[in-house]
Length: 272
Image (cartoon, rainbow, N blue to C red; front, side, top):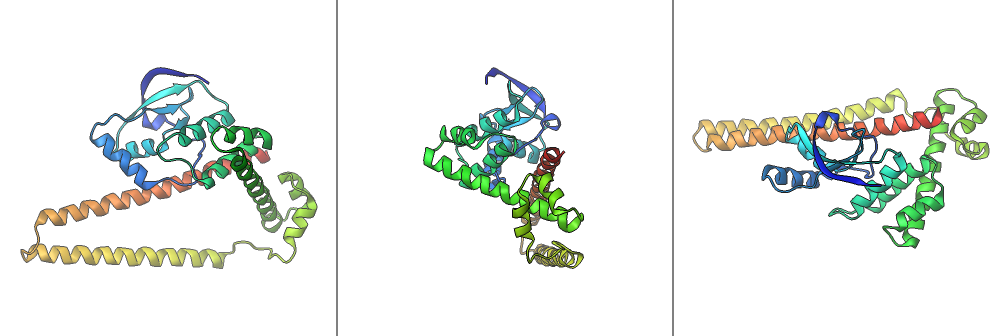
């Protein structure tokens, strides 16, 4: 794996995120990079491959998007193999200011196993960054998580798609006996319309309560401005802050949605 020294200005709309090596985005880290970009500080370039797939720099990319920048300074890494890109991304994170958590390492190991890497190879990759005993334990956890994912996917096919146990087991490459054991005593419907209604009702109540609180705050501030007790600039600053927070919430929702859909696409390709 080799990287060119020369950097390139690449439109943000062209930078693709095809995989993740962290379970979640760290909002504080994104804010940190926002501040650096605002102050014109020297921020490391993003790393992308020739197809503009992002390898390293997800927090920096998110910061640039929040600042509505149009271009990102990128270094091109001559790598197209998905497993190698994931391994490189893990290494970049491990050597950075915000090392991956154990959950992040397991999350990445699961992806490597899904790509066909054998356990020993994944252990060797992680052992370059972690003690061998820790790498071995994390990969074992990843194998366990992957087995559970396959079983849950097979259960959904049996419960929701009326697939036979044998067909679902074959499709998801698990032992029929394991699937049968998981099915014992399990309801045919995993998520029904009533449970979905409960989730949406709870979500609506939470947002309604938050909206009412924010509206009352703005009302009180507006009244204080009208009475001359509060400077109008303070009111304007609060409104601006609320809009920033709403925009951040939207970005968080988009990030989780993109992560989910990326995983679903990978799962669909593996089954196909």
